[in-house]
Amino acid sequence: MSQDKVGILQLLLLGLLVAPSWAAYKLQERYSWNQLDFAFPNNRLKEQAMASGDYIPQNALPVGVEHYGNRLFVTVPRWRDGIPATLTYINMDHSLTGSPELIPYPDWRANTAGDCANSITTAYRIKVDECGRLWVLDTGTVGIGNTTTNPCPYAINIFDLATDTRIRRYELPSVDTNPNTFIANIAVDIGKNCDDAYAYFADELGYGLISYSWELDKSWRFSAHSYFFPDPLRGDFNVAGINFQWGEEGIFGMSLSPIRSDGYRTLYFSPLASHRQFAVSTRILRDETRTEDSYHDFIALDERGPNAHTTARVMSDDGIELFNLIDQNAVGCWHSSMPYSPQFHGIVDRDDVGLVFPADVKIDEMKNVWVLSDRMPVFLLSDLDYADTNFRIYTAPLASLIENTVCDLRNNAYGPSNSVSIPKQAALPVGPPLYTKQYRPVLPQKPQTSWTSSPPAPLLPPSRTYLPASPGPVVSSVSVSTNTVGPAGVEVPKAYIFNQHNGLNYETSGPHLFPTHQPSPPGSQDGLKTYVNARQSGWWHHQHQG
Image (cartoon, rainbow, N blue to C red; front, side, top):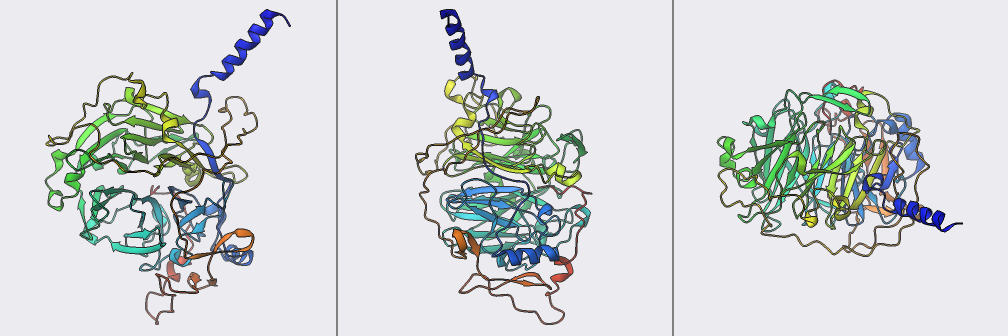
């Protein structure tokens, strides 16, 4: 081969090595499913549940994700019939990749639909705080849109992840909701210590924002603000080739800044039918006396630009906000030290196949990002192809996701510091937080054996790198007290008994947070069957998406 040809070949190889970053995906696929499966104790019970209609695999849609230790939590709302559990997790020590069965958390019995005081009927977004507590809002609903029934009230359930026990349940009082209330999103604000904790809930269709104090065990509602309402010009959506209108969807996604020098955070939020973000100091939200006179304490930021609807957002402890862009099959970013304007918004990843409706985005305690995609509009408005992969969970380190984007300030190339300020908050400067969370150090990763999918068809995105390797050892020790290990090391719940009247009934072999269910006297609320056995059509009429 001539020297000239060798030189040309070397240049071609160099070009492949330095291909533009948009040609390679940053998020790595960890789990995927054609349809969801659940960890029944044995096949006989699974077949029995499927025969009775209490388990219908095609009716299950994952909408929320959260990571803690060796567990990845996944929520599945009871929009349609046949959802055996709404709060579940994956044991990542047993299932490194693939399509694992979802294990009910903390056990099967705690997922009994309609057992209001003892169980969770429907969960959407969930949050683990730095104190090792899992916050779950039970909407108490079965069905969706015009099929919705409300067997239980809205209730906050908080679990201690070290013991897998529920440590508090708080029902939202009627004054905090209205007939249109629908709440899917939660943000958890930890202050000086674990008792100085607040949770904020976005009422999407009731147009309000609810604060809850852990220390006071009390809640209050902000409802007199037009920023909670949808933008009438932003109700048209296009996802996966489907055009639809979600014009009534108000306040939805929320994120919390790091703690500022005055000891408070900033809550950022957006209505779903909107391209704009809004902000308010948690100094206001933590004060019950400000529910009616805080209008001017809320501020409006710029629009994100066209096709910028978002349902989920999260902010890291150093002020980097990630948010899904459901119209663009993408995940975006913004560094909160910069102005909130389109030129300071970046795209960290886009995938017109794998990221169709990236429903949830989270950052865990080790600063790894988790993204769940679920093709929700196709599920609700059309038909999923269950021979295809429909649901995916991706992960990547936050630092690698934002690298070489406008959100990566290490290159110092993107202009002045943030001009956004909160009115009447002279003591709320933009800059480094007063308190910094102490995350566990990132542990060495096992060597990855990467492979790529088959070459894509023309016009499809390039192949994504998958992640078969373990994420590495876990520092925390997690005790799973409500489950046992079955054959071949598969983790399954304890004794499980099917009951035709109440759907699913459960027994435990030892002390448990929830007492074993006993039949109720005639005329009492053992009428679970009136709604658990009621078969809902699941037809999408009035949007209550998660």
